[in-house]
Image (cartoon, rainbow, N blue to C red; front, side, top):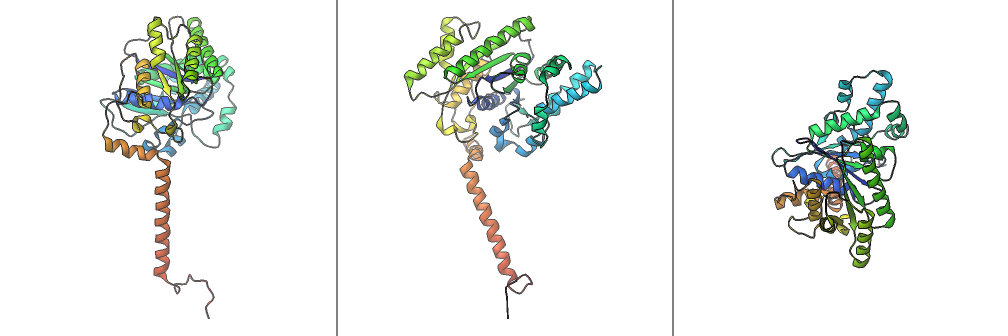
Length: 367
């Protein structure tokens, strides 16, 4: 069970990519921070990092990509173990200190609210080779990887009220780190295809089994969440929902049949075509109060994750909301870029006109 006064770690995982998992993390993280919570979002999708893109107008993206992150922390720990096998617990805790690697969003949240991001790692020429060279079995068996993950979990829970981890899709050792070793809550994300539902359900039950066998004193709360639900064909969507409810039989735990039916009916993320083109936060794209909006769906998900502690996004100044929203708009950015290019060209041409043909730079033939 979760300890009183200790932060929660929430992993978002999907068996398939393309479910909107990363977008959900960014929005839920913002809603929690807006409620005055200290929030860390972690990009553990190491093969395809991109969580920071949802915060692009509010972060220096280049700084994020140059910043050390998950891969760098893992490598530093592995290198240290190789050189000093008698690492002390204090040294392991130091290497697992997340705030040595995070960047905070430049925004004034309510109270002590803060939103920080731990990136996948420095996006330089050594990133991909470094990722490919990792032997994760060796990390656990020979280098006491569990000790590092436990220290990392302790530091996240001590430093933040909510840590939201974006796990890579599918299965594997890297997925196990995020879904089994770290979280207090697993958000099992799935689309309504049979493969996505079956894969997410199998992962969910495997996580429950691990928690019971690996750490009997610890439980992992599992929240199945349908995502990108397209209601253009209501009968087919309803059939998919029924298949999912059967696949996740008994989940979430601690609910009777009526409560569980109410949960599945209310906690799902709809598909919205206008959000399919750019990494845009619904907290800026939607107006609070519309129960059918994407923002409202993320509010309901936030309430489920926080056990009702945070259930709504506070109203925002309209001018401020629209100002930030324009920062997500590629068409507006392209238009501004075209204007900047035109101004630059006009300035250059004006400079040529002022210098005239006799300034020593005119290379045309003259008699």
